[in-house]
Image (tube, rainbow over all chains, first blue to last red; front, side, top):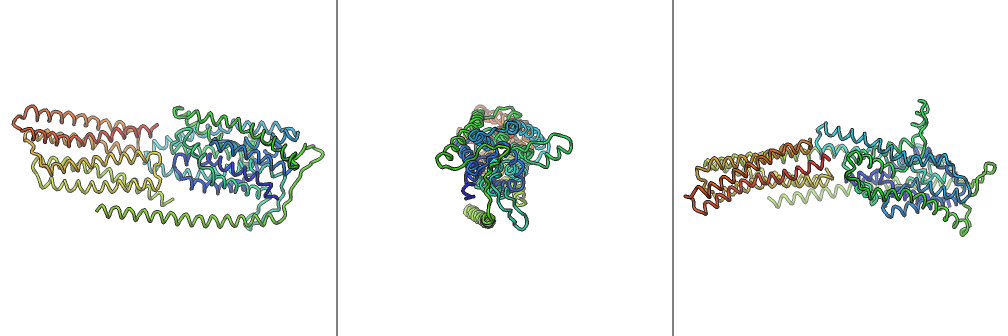
Length: 409
Length: 216
């Protein structure tokens, strides 16, 4: 039953992976610096790690926007957001899962008659603007720095690109971690108030109820990355602007910094200690940040090679996503409540807290343990298989070369 | 990652080696023509076999570089340009080999009054190709200097044209003692020598565009 209600969240996670992985490795794959296969594996692993280790901060903020207080409600809200993201992805538009889930939650608030917390909403919406601006602000100086280094160092182009490639893998891993940490709230945030799972002991570490949800969400994102993100990656990487290798590195680095800034509670606490205002823990739209980075670099280079038609399409997606998700959520809730007779939540009053919490038995923890074991075994088998395949290919290639030179002689 | 760095360094070494081969080939071409004109057959044959070995080595390196660049996804965005450049430069090597072979097979009879002009033609044509090498090397390390380095290629190419024009004019207008077949043969040989600078210019045109693409 738990897994059934989580289905819509997992679907949303899958959509997020299919769509937002392009923001992590799109520029690298689009510029052909890294193969899609390698990018997908790295992104999947680090998204899961980011979600489980650092996903709590942004989830709280989303909970404040609208505490969906029934499983049916969580299910429907996540489903509406997921369908919206899926539809936008189908048209190869880099869409924001953040906007989708925010639109869907507002749809739930409107349906149930709950007020929308305007201060939280404005905080989130402000990041929709500051995210890309900050991305551009990070990207331009970084780009100048890397370009000047390249020019002054007189380093061989091939060696420089090999450094860039290695850096892209490292920075991409960091970006994937930040994406998992920042965006897992979009996937599993609406389920946290409605779920209370037993703490899971894995020997080396323990997973709390929300972390178990984040792990499931992370796995769904990873599935989305592996199965469906290739097309969107190519759109982001090569269609907006022709990215050079160093520009590809800088966009990913700038994006990961922005995502990290908006999801690091440690950094926020540090600022408070210094006497500065805290950073809001808000799920940022990675799609918007990456476009901000790309535009920043494009403008610095003279805006000659920016494809404004694609930017226009993306902008339409930004406006359409929350509106579409809100409408979808509202009408889905109507159908679920009136046709399927499922309770989707009601007005929250300060006196009576009508939270319908699903408490998990020990069974779900057992299932999770098996899931983790299966994943580890699959990863090991896949790695060995991949290694053997690569060896076989290179051996065959070497033989064919030897034959070629033999016949030439 | 260490394995990858090794492949990268090996590719860089191979590209440098390829350029060294072309550079040596040009040097041997120049000396080969001089030896032929001066009638030093032994030295000419030595240069001919040297060019043959250099051309073989260049072909092998070219194939290895292209294979490594594709299989290890090296310079994905500029790979096509780099392989085309290497191909164009290999054409120069092929031109050198075929030119010296023409001398070996057809044994053109060069009148003594044209000795200096022919040597000068070979020198200038070889100079044009020679000036291409530093520009091609610079493409990988300092692309913004490529275009200024290429100026010399264009200069020597135009000088080669002038010398070739003056030789042909001399052969057809002043040397009435030669029969038409001899004149046509000399013109053909002049074309062959001149061809080296033309090939260098074609490569320079390409390199110039490649450099702009990298800088912008």
